[in-house]
Length: 467
Image 1: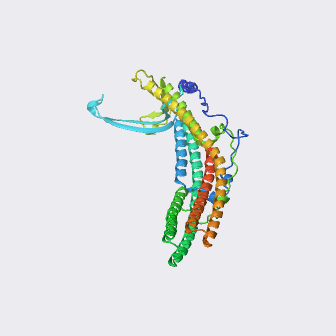
Image 2: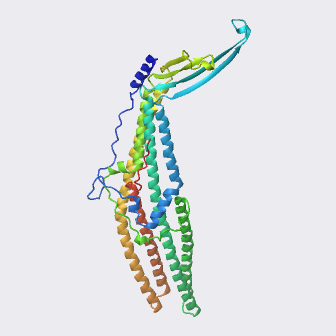
């Protein structure tokens, strides 16, 4: 028995070999600097979402979504599932010790007994031992453990990515609802103005002052505003429904008073260097952990070419009588090693290794594509930051000039200098300019959210659990 224990200890000590290829992080296929961005410094820290989104109502909505959204629940449960899979795979490295007991009674007929008389044979046993424990001489089990661990870390990054997407989606949906409601208010005010103009033209027409052409022009403008009213009433309700879906329920009844679009402000976001994305964006980290998992699978595929050794060992007591099961001299033990040497498998092991290498190459390409996509999203966000600021200033000037044009046209029409057509044209231009101003304001705020997400900001809480 001492020799058996010594052999087990020796095999355990030898089971430290690993055939996993040395992992090398692929080079990032992007430039080292952002174009047209000055004073770039690495390691810039992004604000937490509570600091970035300063509107109390929006903060309340994001907290509600993080708690109730079903995608978040699925992501959290996926992390728990991969954590359990890792623990299952890790347990294979250790022998499973089981206790067993058994009894066997058998009647032997006389014609089968050496004495010619029927007999009853009894056997009772109690044992403690391990069964078919694979000694990981070539690191196959350890490679599978590394693969499961990397997959678990990848699931954590997938959860972070879901959180980041949810936060940005809730913020964008909230701004969409605010823009729709502000546009709806504008349409109602414009319709009221058109209807008032229509009443004036109808009275003038009845008095024989206005022509039928002017009357139809006024009716056309009012009907056009009614069409827009129905459109934005529908769009506003649909935007609220989309927000409720993200929240996992209805909008909280105690929601704080929303901030108008013009007063919306976000915290300053430092751009940093492109290399910062490799350590910040959860989708890039997820892709890298998936690459590490594929790399570990190669080690397991390589180890399958070598012999595998399994051990079965038990120690216990064996007796023909239950009362004497634990008496002196009833001790028994079993040591049963087995070895499996692959000789011919029709190329299955070679194909499995080739498949593992191909999967690694696929994950390298996915990792590089993820980096390139992230780089593009940040670059787009940077150019949007500049151009939307310019576009918004131009819209402000357009709204101001349209208001002045409308005021002048209205005064000249009331004084009888210009006709109804000029006034209606001024009203239409003012409405279009105000509506476009709201949409540009929304697009500018949405682009800031997209840039914040593209840079990898959002949820900074550490969700790593003890394994």
